[in-house]
Length: 380
Image (cartoon, rainbow, N blue to C red):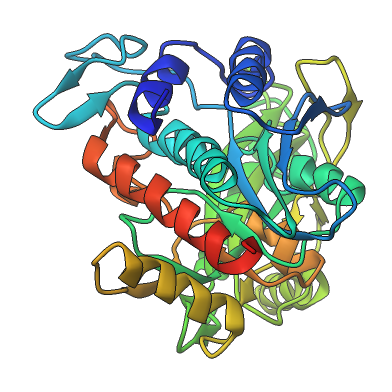
């Protein structure tokens, strides 16, 4: 089975976050069929395949997530049909990121099959990345100790050497309920929430030359009670997504937001990092802190040099860039400081959209790159 055939097979199996079990079954069986020395699952349901000598160190870990976002809107194709037309494979998850996962599985297997490896190489098919980046990969890295990690997210075959992080927070504005006919008898939390949004929007963003601006966006708002009928609500909670830069800490961000609220004389609030419960398809439940740090790898690093060699071996000229979104690399590079790069088929702009699709030529090229990288770093 080649990478395009495997992508098609995986796209035809729905698997939104928390429901990846059937995808995991297919990945596990494919890895065994392709000759992986060992294939296991952990308590989260992530599938880990390993090649190379069992007693050797693990030089490379390729990571791709199995879960996809829900299908929404009116599609012109079957979102789980895996149709191939006009040089593209259509369906939910084709770009984000079953194409990259399939290419990694097939590329690593090809390297092991075509030459003797002196080091171990692993592929992790992780879960829940669309829900909480990094947690499932962290479980994998607790079991193996890779010297380098490749994130197989869509990059249009561009080599990524850095990534913004993500911090998710809840701002709760407290009010005083009163009858809507007599608002002066209460404190309207909605009015204070509007003031808070304006104050936070006026903050000067932090910036870096490599990653650009640290972005703060409100993504959800709800009153308590909801709906609040004929009365001022007791409170209003706003969820924020903050895209972070290398070196920023949780406290840096929270302190800056508190200062902005205080400057606007807003004190009736609580601000905290979210830690809501998440459940894997294995029924494992946990409450992760929604803090995924940014990371950057020096472009003079040996891993980058090897990746450039692998690209040139395909006859292509390397292009370098940075991720504009958060990935599991927040765990490998941001938390654990393991050298990490990103490389995969598909365009970032095609992720999560109606009529998602991936260029099948890029899927094949990605598999070739992964094979070349394995041979260059772990081959005899």
